[in-house]
Image 1 (cartoon, helix red, strand yellow):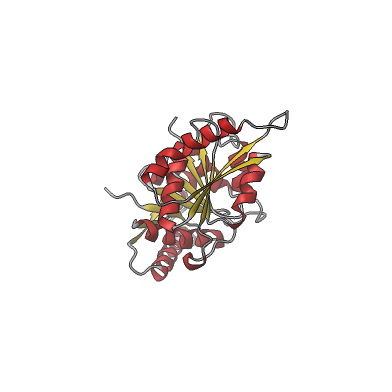
Image 2 (cartoon, one colour):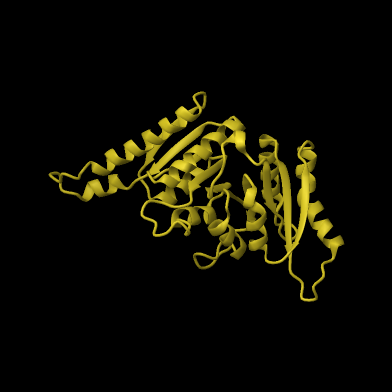
Length: 278
């Protein structure tokens, strides 16, 4: 069974950017696109009096939003298989459920009513923290395919922390005809780094993907400094930034780790958060 690429919409400009990005992505991978709008109108309808003039308003809004988004995708890619669904759940629950049987989930960086463009929407952040599949948060300005930078940046973490993310990044670079730039940041109290250890970490993270995608050119970047700042800087002219995440148990807002939180809030391009299996 072919899993679809799922994109969440809410009628905001940010979610329409996500639809455009997801449409291009589905076309690159030959996947069907599923447009999802989450609404609790069915729940509220049950508790509203039957004479309420607003009884079906949310239903109409939901259907219009999802139909408009699906039409937008169809205009952008006429040959793409597009489906649309209104799900009677809150947005986070709906996208997490959809992600159980999806190639990936795509969201905008902000929802309707966000206070400032600089802050990541709570739905996007929570889905990225908890989803079982890759989640792409569409941030920054990103070009059409013909004007792409043809660079995919991969954040390389400690040993064993990057395998699924690296596989995703290689696949993306291959489909885009892009260079894969692997970035490893380091900070050492004595101001030196053991390059042999760094090379082993690069080798461990990249060898499987390189074997599966031999045509992808790989550049290694060992950068002194904080990982978040290094990744954000290297992503300045990238098409996609890919990071791995081990989902941590604990208080909300710390599940992804400080580096991933930082890039999700500040990266100048779309960010793919790929869950690690171990």
